[in-house]
Amino acid sequence: MKELSCDLHIVGGALTGLLTAYCASSLGYKIVLSERKNITLDNKKTTTDTRTTAIAEGSKVFLESQGLWKFIKGFAEPIKNIKVIDETANSNLDFNNPINKSNLGYIVKNSKLISVLINELKKKNNVNFITGSSLTSITYSNSKIISFSNDKKIKSKLIIAADGKNSTVRKILGTNFFKKKYKEKALVISFFHERPHNNIAYEFFLKSGPLAILPMQKESNRNQSALIWSNKPEIVDKIASSDLNIKYVKEIINEKIYQQLGNVTNINSLQSFPLSAHINEKFYDNKTIYVGDAAHSIHPIAGQGWNLGLRDVKSITKLLRETKERNSTIGTKSFCKMYNDKCYYDAYRLFEITDKLDWIFKKDQSYFKFLKKAGFNIINKNRIFKEKIVKFAMGF
Image (cartoon, rainbow, N blue to C red):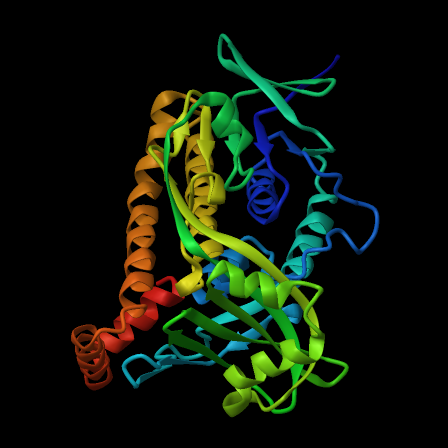
């Protein structure tokens, strides 16, 4: 069995794990990054993930501070305005950016983000990639935490679990969590359309669930956007199934987006995902911390999922830097609890906010319609309140 030794063992090689590895490696820590899937590291096509990620302006500022944004900005389509339309209460909100020389957010393809992170990590001498590696057990020895995967034994001072909603680390350590299953699925489509999107994002609140349209970069001079629609599982499965002719899928989408973007000219990718949210009882265990979806996941209604995980990365990066400057030890109970205390409230707050927003906007009774319409009117008339909502969404 091959033995490896490092400061940090990062479990999970998707977006959050890659970003954590990059930020920690810049501080000089020796890192092993293990991923159960076989990631291709030697060519440009590192993933088949066709989804997009919404990056808030605050997240962009952090990526800029880490020297990464210069590699990402060429693939990022800015969001300059957000239009919220509640069809159940016949109400609208327009959100504009109150901060000069910035945007409300950016839409980037996951494949582009992953490629940038892997390319930059490959330049680091203190990062060791292990792919096709499934974690099987975890033990402890003195000041080390030891993980076993396939034919490898990895000794580290700290495990950073970035292995997603179904975290293997969480299962092995038995960390408790609360999970909420929504009785709906998300339909995720990228498509070309007739009219330019003018860098406007749309959020429609429908009886069936929220539908978001996000502006993407042009390809071959064709207008492109992404659609995320929460709906009943049987409806999403029907639309996403290969049994339904693509022309009918186009017509279904046309009905929802024609007024904003004209006709759909081509569907580039179509996926569906079951919707659920969860939050761990705590974001740490013995010599272990959880980041991103391994710690929490939220309803996609506000498009804040990855930005919340990025704030975990920002917190652990700051803590790792301060610990190194003080010449202290990482992975201690106080270290792990300090990380938990920095991140837990932020995640719990967004978990509750997104859950309650999804609940209230599905209500179609006259009483709820009145409340929603009144709420929209109050926000529209109060510039300061409106700006606070925008800055919160931007991550400031």
